[in-house]
Image (cartoon, rainbow, N blue to C red; front, side):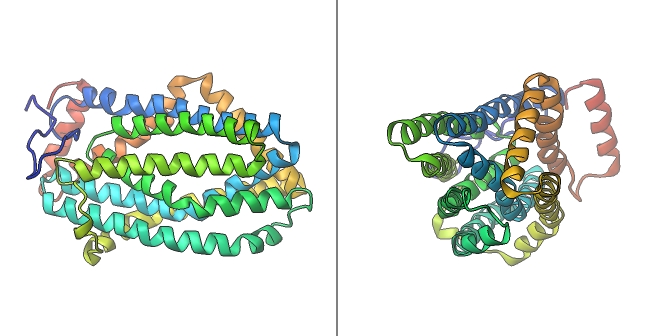
Length: 346
């Protein structure tokens, strides 16, 4: 089929931007789907660069150490959830590729309900255990106040990060990478402006950076939820249908657990290595921040590397999942592989 974007509308209307990866030209899908991910990486770099620049230049070295050091902790704690979110995306892609709208709808609502439940859990545990985590890390007295402040504010607004990532994962699972990119741009610009306003104009220090982060993430979460509420396809979100479908939940967990464990362990390992190499928590934070800056410099100098490592990886997951269905025989997979390599249309 030459037309790869599904044009049918559900009752009540709604715009659609989903793409059936099992139809049409695969090389065209690579460009239209992966390019927004590539450009989005640049904005994500800007997002992180501005945070570091503002704190380092307008607050203090202790504040920079605090912000840099909590990054691996946050990644370790939310990595498990992000892995489950990737599992949800794979399940949605499989149902979508099989034209199983009922399966898509169940997975979308199960995923969002799971996200809301886990957001409450992560917020409560994170805020309640912040003093314990600060003590457990052996944070020096001169860094402790900024570390506690940043973690407390971040966990208070972690629901925005979770909802955006799940919502963006749902959209990408059906081939829509453009709107998550637009929301990332809005969030990055908003974070830049709020960083400068809160830190420079209102002298809020680390609290200002943390507040700017959660407000920006909340904005992107609202935007992605609005899109899902107005979607004209099986991914359309209806609050009345928000519940956990346990068989679907089992599939999400089965696919997502390996990625969840990997992401959590990567954060823990990176923090452990930094701590062992530095000998102190403040130095660990500075080391992690320096590593992050070096990685950003490397990526900015090698755009093709960014495409391969990030955009390419994120493209493969929904595309492969849409094709991996019990209804498709092995001969079809071989044909897809041949056409992928030859650049032929489907």
